[in-house]
Image (cartoon, rainbow, N blue to C red; front, side):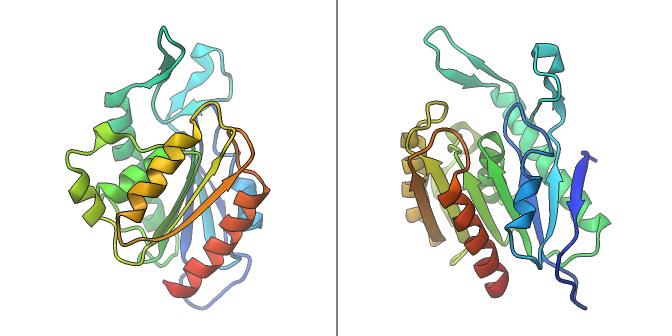
Length: 223
């Protein structure tokens, strides 16, 4: 199983807790998002997964990736499609194994991802790989090549599922147009969508943090 960090609920209950699984972005590691546990609903058991690919060999010591990226001759970022497909399998297996290894309510598993990790959260949901109860995705994009049929992907979003999308309008790595495309896609489903756009670059700004906190509490209350 992948390495991960674990933050038990800050408020204990007799019932098994819901779980939030964090998927970090390219070049980061499992420590990158774990601080968000402090602003998420205190009833959540938070797990931060570490991606399997070590980027030390490409000059990024301590950095990890779910799949490899590279720039083409025009400066556009291209991704390893086969690697992206494998990463969905790896992340799904992690969700299965990790939630079996801790005491939790496996009917109330949430996923949150940033950048490359956000792409994973979308893929797991839209391919119906694991029965998630909600997702939050920050600064991501929809990797269309991972889906054979967009209509089937839409139908894999349960009615009323809490979906939070955030994106920086000044993002020069994954432009805001990708965020808008995601927003429009989820608006065509029956998801309960929250969209947050703020004037920052590629990151999670204060408006996004506030939205994540609210989304986590509202979602735990309803699932």
